[in-house]
Length: 189
Image 1: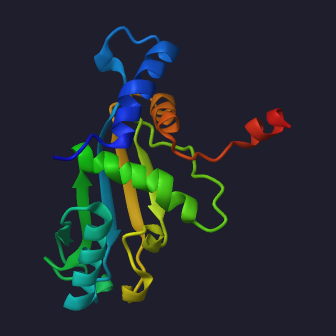
Image 2 (image 1 turned 45 degrees about the vertical axis):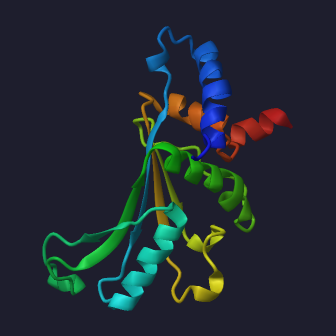
């Protein structure tokens, strides 16, 4: 039997009560929470089966569950793309797997990025956060020796927050390393 993820305990014991205190929510269901995390990567349309299998394996190692291959819906001759051809790979994480992945992302993967100064504090307008990673080898599950071709990774964190400031505050309290804005830097100095 698995124990409760560390980040989930942090959310329940510290983040949710602090959000209630700061924002004055009257109902516990008003408190924003994370619904799911979606990992997505694109695959070159001219990639062979071995390359597709390697990308699917690597994304599965990062996510902890088997990813789904996404296929093109229609043919585009300018891109040498046929209908039904594999163009991407994605996985949706919910529950404990989502919390474990977020913990590994915040505590292990992001700090290993070279010259890391934080991530952009910009959300999508609906309280959700999108993060693009150019090199997936920042995750400790990936051994660099086995990687033939590096790939980028898109991470979408979906929350129940109605506004960007609520979603940003939720992620900040969970430990997301947001970049400080220029105005905050000048005020601190």
